[in-house]
Image 1: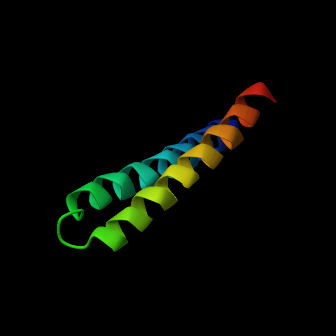
Image 2 (image 1 turned 90 degrees about the horizontal axis):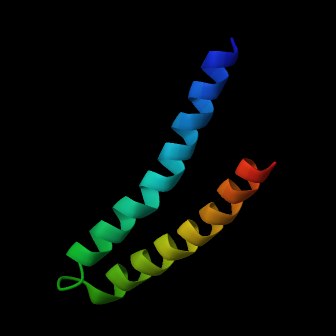
Length: 62
């Protein structure tokens, strides 16, 4: 039972980090097509990564 919980936690953390990375890549690709939308995506992804680094850091320390 503990193994399933640990696997679930690892999966959630991977998804939490993977989503903003994909957003950054999509924003960089769309930079020429739609600059305002791309800029917003990159800013949101950067904020998400900053918050993620803080929450994951707290999980690792706790």
